[in-house]
Length: 292
Image 1 (cartoon, one colour):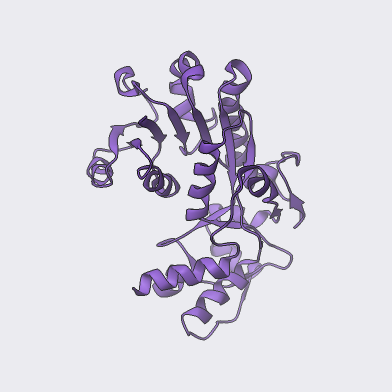
Image 2 (cartoon, rainbow, N blue to C red):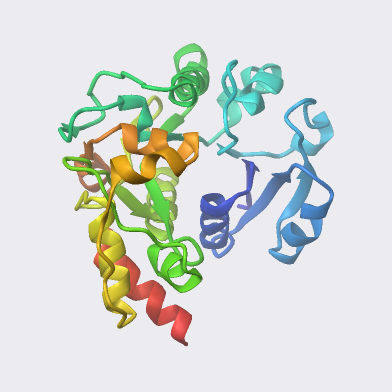
């Protein structure tokens, strides 16, 4: 049986999932915001659709969809992909084999470095994280109203080939920023895809999963590791208070929270074995693949 996965926003993480599923009788339908993105999707053997977040997709383009994933950034009204396709989703909820929404661990807010699991209270500290909470509720509503197998995946800092500390060091943009007590979790993009595929194989409607590696760490440690792997001198750390005035509001908001994300549930329930359990293995693999 051929499955059809519709990816609203076929970005960095969704592309890795698409590549995995294409090996297993999945047809991938992906959206892009502009006509320029259509050729790239076709080159990746993805059926392209234009979706600008303002108008819904034509109903005929949704024929035969069996799985849905959204990684579209939310706005103050939640996920525009859900909002513009709510009628279709409600009408076809019982026909869908799996639904996933990529959220953020930012919904937990600042825990002063404390651990959080999926049962932790939500205390978002900025507008974007508040919007994520709303979007989570929207997608989980498909399970609550219709029993659809809808899932939420909360992601911390995402890295991988082309988007890592190795790439930052090579580009000359890496900075070792030291904010005492600040620590955060991260996840390699390949482990996100593996977790999503495991959920597709074992759907549980209403499930929420933290998708993080085993070792939360401060920025300065990760950047230092990248310098060492590249055989370059590790630069001194820059105090956060010294550099904060020159940082973008987005970057400062990233450093506003400190938390450690527990990943036990994806291991116990989905049987996930992380290919990159810490940033060390992930950075080594990126360096190795880039050197080939």
